[in-house]
Length: 377
Image (cartoon, rainbow, N blue to C red; front, side, top):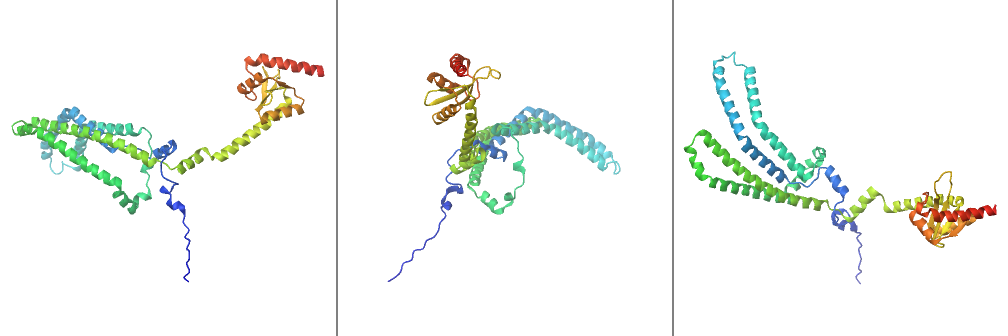
């Protein structure tokens, strides 16, 4: 008879857990996780918004400062042509490296003066484009070198990842859209371009610049629209990537707020310690006012320290019975007054004086207690 053997293979069920973090990421990211991600430089932003705003700023600056730049270029050409005869007159000993360096420095300064408005506007628009998306909270962590960035395997994964493919498709779509806009704009200006042979040099340059600026403005606006759509997508993708598993939320709560079980035990110990201190004050009380079965409030009036009677202990149910038992052992009078006991328990905390609206009711009870005490003496 053939024997059958049963083979048992131990399996760790944790291998079947999604994401390796105790389940599927279904919980919205907490403020702490978003804050930690922000410190690491991980934010939801679209480069297309920045590029679109920067392009728009550049072409607007071209339209505004084109006249300024044209005049400055004419001055540079006039200056260069003016110094050419002087350079020619110089012999081999006169035209030195120092002379060439001086001319080059002057030329660089003049060019910087022309480019300065465009550079400033480009910087401001790029800065504002980022600031609008992510706010102002600079961090240097993204600039810190990481060995993982030099891992060729990780690099290939990034190159052939889903995000890279999506970005490639978007890049092709953007280039195609830019080409279509440029073609249509040039097509509309075809009649003007044929006039370039019949107009002067300055007028031709002005016409060319005007066409370029108009095309650039249209491309910039389209870029901004694409950037806004991309920003919405990046915002959704970032939130989806930041989602947490239920276990991650629990672990974060434990790390920030502490283990709920430990905190519960700590609160219990604090309450027990507070109750012990409170019970020590009961024998010193002048009177204990009861409900009579559910509430007990111990009152002490020391006119040398307090302006009004003070609650030194209070409790309900089990604690109320303990207060009454301690009061009996210490021969502290117990007076039944349901409305007053409820009012004191609800409105006055331990070691606080009673409110003025309860002065008369408490004073009447204390007067009776003091009278009985004097008679006993």
